[in-house]
Length: 334
Image (cartoon, rainbow, N blue to C red):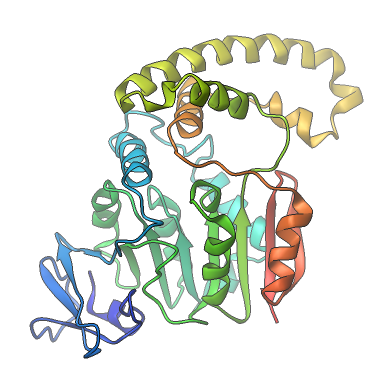
């Protein structure tokens, strides 16, 4: 962790001021230390291990199964045992293009901005955005594989990965110019509360982007429901991974058949995003990660677009823009 991070971090329990348990006079990476809350009614302490500040708060929303499932998944990914050069099929170029398009901004917009990647996963996007000279960028997540993501940011002065959860963010309200949360809150026990916590962190005229599962037909959702009914979702993660590999293999060959048929109907349905998204090119490893990401999480809530629009409006956001891969919405704080 870098010393400059303390200009933004605060106690996730009481929002008190955090200090290090020893004097640090330069901005070198702080590998092992403790952060202590100065609020006399709190006095909580948090550990920094190998450069990663652990600011998780034990509460009803931080369940062990949620932490362990994503720790296993991102641990595999960061060790190149799932996708190697992509994340859910997006390489670095596509990941950046998705970010800028979704937020409706140009790369120059990021200069001197304060950014939060809420639910940063592998941390790759967090690090990629750092090259556009933001004032500071944070990535937060809860999973146990976060140390690998943190190590990659330790050589950058204005980029920090922190272990923290959305329900107890270690930041003051109205801290960020951009809050990015892609595919996260539907995996929490209370997506609406998670959204509200993120909304509080956005500055006036700042931007919030959220992508969540849409309530519509999905073979992944149907399979997940069948697994729950048969209690197969309780299998150990290595077995779920094996099942995901089998389902990915079946999906891969079915997709090839569908893609051949798409050649005949493409002229008629080429502008239909839903159909074109189904038949788009996917690698086997992308399908493995997608299946595991669908089967392993405890929670996977789904919503209608009008519900999520109301969330934005009720928390003071306007100028909503939408992505074709619904539901992806960006709003600007009034």
